Amino acid sequence: MYGLQHVLTMYGGIIAPPLIIGSAVGATPDQIGILIACCLFIGGLATILQSVGIPFFGSKLPLVQGVSFASVSTMTAIVAGGGSINEIFGAVLLASVFGFIITPFFAQIIRFFPPVVTGVVITSIGLTLMPVAGNWIMGGNAAADDYGSVAGIGLAAVTLLVVIVCSKVGKGTLSRLAVLVGLVVGTIVAIPMGIADFSNVLEGDIFALPVPFAFGWPEFHVASTVSMFIVVLVILTETAADILAVGEITGSKVNSKRIANGLRADMISSIVSPIFNSFTQSAFAQNVGLVAITGVRSRFVVTAGGCILLILGVLPIMGRVAGAIPMQVLGGAGIVLFGSVAASGIRTLSKVSYQDNMNLVIVATSLAFGMLPIVKPDIYSQFPNWFEVIFHSGISSAALMAIILNIVFNELHFGKKSRNKNAFAASPPRMVREDEIRALEEGDTFIGGKLYSKNGEEIPVQRIDETGDVTHSLHIPTVDRVRADTGNVRTGKNQ
Image (cartoon, rainbow, N blue to C red; front, side, top):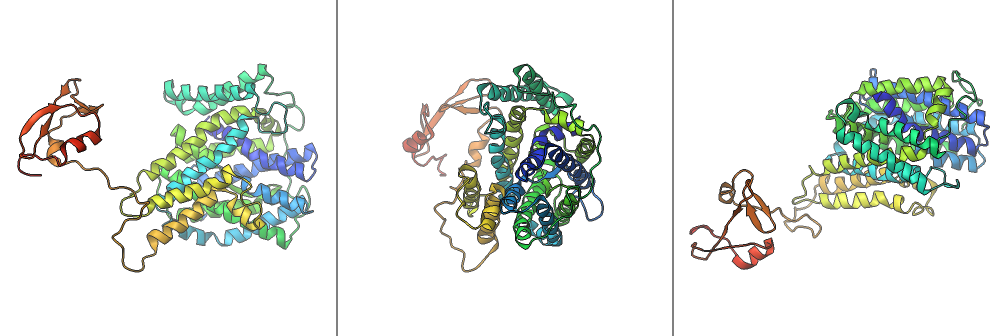
């Protein structure tokens, strides 16, 4: 059941690329069905490899693999330039081989991912997924008449409410299956609303094995391969970030060896993928959020999800059932899932020291830089295609900026260290004297300028004059008032 929850969470994301690419190349509905089934099948194999792991392959972490959405724009650009689906398969295959070769290099960048960098990357993963959730909530298809309808958004709200209620009042299994329960209830509610349609479930084959090179042999072209290799670099960056994110959430140690094994699994899956009519593979960030929100950290739960993906890949009828879940329902659950990823990143950033360093500048600049292509998608439209491919992803933008700034401010040491603090540096923390702490008791609370004991009784606050004598009791309306009235606080003859 936990594995099924993972599958339903990522199902919309994994079938979107074959739907988009299939439509772009003019594929028939049956051919698009083949693409979807193959993507599910390869996604299942890649997930099992990543979670179970074998020597040199697989991070052995609860990471769900599937077709990367980062490659969609490049693949549609290949089609727009006159390329065929076979050219896309060839570009994916060759670029993934190059990506596999350079995975040891990416594994060595772990030292450049301290908490100030990983926190930025994890937070940006959650934030950049929010437009995806928003699009799902509105229906997923901007050309549809009911896109953004009140009924559809209301359905998403019902799903979100069910997830929150189950998380709040549920115990044990019910709480952990809150997302799955929300998806099921939301789909049931959608049926009488006419939003969920199961009429096409029985149409088509019930069982079908993926056939290698079903669309013919791959074609290799230099330009398309170079463009796809840039996408592979982005995928490597995002997968490394997801490995770090799920490692942080599960409390697992992530070193360069584990990252290398995870990236190799990513790339070997991407190499095999076009042979079986699928595309580049990467870890799914929304499932990282599911691990965070449910607290189910077992990698074998994800393995079970991989097995379900395999079954869906050879049983197209089951895929059609899962595909009937309305996008609005997925969007309602996505609010919690994607928000959980961002919250995990914020938790990581809370552990970062901002005293006497430039970490505040690193976090501020990197997050803002990562959000630019999200709030303004056409910001890089006039740049070269390779540049737009890299920086159009908010995740890779934030990650690259955080890595570079961390190296500049925290890794490079040259010249004499200045004692002057930068204007952007965090203010020094407030301090309280030890003798003042000793005067407090367990349960004392300061509210609205008054000090109360644990029993709710007000404790008088006494003014100390310059000689150290108590003058009178006073009410403290604000902290600023204390400083203005008393200046330097003294106890006895010692300041």
